[in-house]
Each structure stands twice: as structure tokens, then as C-alpha cells.
Length: 184
Image (cartoon, one colour):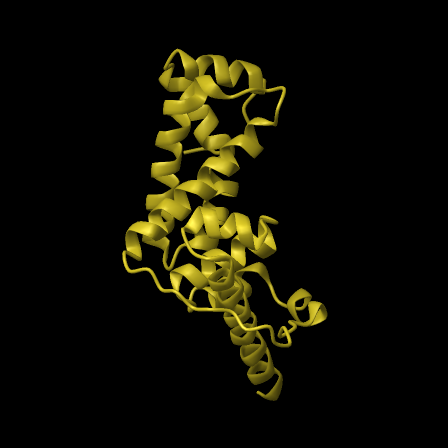
């Protein structure tokens, strides 16, 4: 199976998907699946969960493709948003119990940028997979996607304080792992 870039324009890909042309849907999938599976892996605990998120996300993409507006964003940005929301939905299903933790204003733990730059994306992703699903999701949404705590709270159905707590926990965890790695 080849994953070469499609010769069709974004507009032609969208039009073909709207009319349920299976060949065009396959082209869209092949063109974007590798970058989107990396996104899914950043939210998932393991490879199987990432693939499930990816497949659910593409199903939603194909079901909602007629609502795509090229004037608002690129097709990739639109698909990425759907994948992030699919990952959040997946995590909600996995975490039926709501944990409520109140945030106390303390000194934020800081992860040294240089330490993270020395690590590969795979190493960071591996480290994050050991966090709880909610903590990993908050970290990804805040650091990678640029959401604020209010938006994260709304997406994950948690309070802003709980979102801040999860981010703090993720940072503490990463700091401890980086310190342990430096000592080794």
C-alpha cells in the first residue's frame, strides 16, 4: 500500500468525498493518515487505542465532509480538529469517573525547553503514555494545541482548576523523569 501524496487538489478531494467516491476517500486517508496517527498517539495510551481514535476520526470526517469550509481553514486543520475532539471523546469513554481536584496557586513546575529539545518526539510520547488519560489530554491540549484551561475544562467536562492541576501533574512527572534521566 503506497502512501504517496495525491495529485488531486484539496478541493477535488473534498468534492469526491462528498459524493462518497471510495477511491477519493482512500486518497484523502492515505494523504493524511500518517500525520494524524501521530496526533492520535499523543492522546492514546497504546497503539491500539491510537488506531481506534484514527478510524473513528476518519469516519466522522467522511460523515461531516460536506460541512467543511475552505474559507475558514485548510482541510488538514479541519481534520486535525475532528481528530482532537475524537480523541477527547475516546478518553471520556475510558474515564467514566469524574475526578475533581481543586487547584491551589503554587509555583508552576517548569520543564526545561533544552532538555525536551534533546529528546526525540518518540521519547516524549513514550513518557506521556505513562500519565493518566486525562492528564495526558490536558497536557496535549494546553501545550500542543494551545487551548486555555477554560476551553480544556469545557472540552473534558472538568473545572478550570482541575485542568490546571492535571497540567501541573504532567509537568512534575516530566521533570522527575528528566532529572532521573540526567542522573543515569
